[in-house]
Image (cartoon, rainbow, N blue to C red; front, side, top):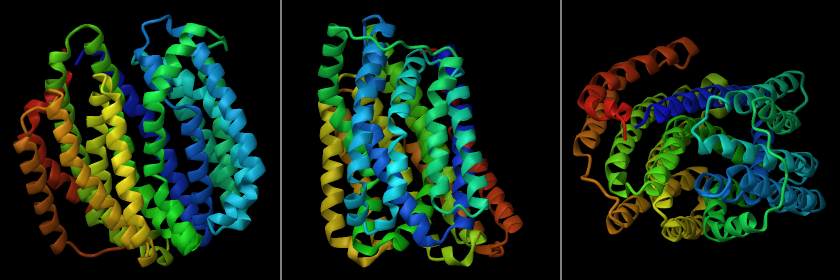
Length: 466
């Protein structure tokens, strides 16, 4: 990895650490101040808005990162397209908020959905600015708009929730984050003027046709479970599931997404410079890092899942869901890293086929399992994501992107996880905050003592020049 990539990965990790830590604080605050039904209603609103955000920004990062044209011209054209799409989507959501909320079993959430829809044009603009920074691995400048915007939104949400505003406190926080992001990005130097270049628009459209559906499928994959539970079981069932999902989502976002965010532009650069033969070795290092690091975090969280009651006894039922969803996040992180190489190598249609297969399998299974409760949905998520792992590996092999199976990494992660399980069996089962933190630190330390030395050479290799 080049020095630029190393610095980029560190800055992206720092950005994610700040922004996702603020999300954790928001999650904990909402769990403390909201009921299960209120938290479920908010989760359903956020799911719909997340889908809208992806629709308006489909392929933006890929287009800006891969273009061989003037990046500012391409970014300006994509900005025009994305903001226009965001404005249209916002209008549609405002107009249809009532029927949508009713269909999801939360008719009282219509007002929150209308307010949340107003975030879309702003997040569209901020997304293009982030993509331009992403192209050059200039994640340092992302700290202000990304982390700064999230901190502002988190502060608003927690303050309003503590004052009894209710579930709408999160929506007001989202709106503050959305408005602040493009403003702070401009302050950080990402000043993009809306333009229209016919050639750039044609290039963006061609790439959008291939990558866009994949992005939409990806966001459906991480939101369709909320929508299914809400429609079949109601917002109260969504509440506990969404809390467990948000906690299990943190290692994926903090590690797998960071590594994938650095890996894609690195691989795109290797392809542009005619060094595609280096893709398998590069992917091997990032795969090992993903396995080892997320494996430790998920092992610790899963074995400490009972401690979720520190947020209130009403969340006791979410402990099992959290343990199950850790297996889901671990598998999804691996797929995310592999998908970056498939896309960067120009096999976008195969990436789309993999994502579509994942969605079809998940939707089909949810038809039969959702009625059995949130635990059945969590088991479905784990099963389907791990079915996709060997399939994706075969796609990598077919395209000459595979590397020798990382037997040492797999064995060390499994052995360290087993050792942590044995240790957890003899530790006192404390559900207090201090005891929970102590247990987590003991388990994580034990895991690192076993897994890190066995993979030291490969992990250090991340710092080597490509």
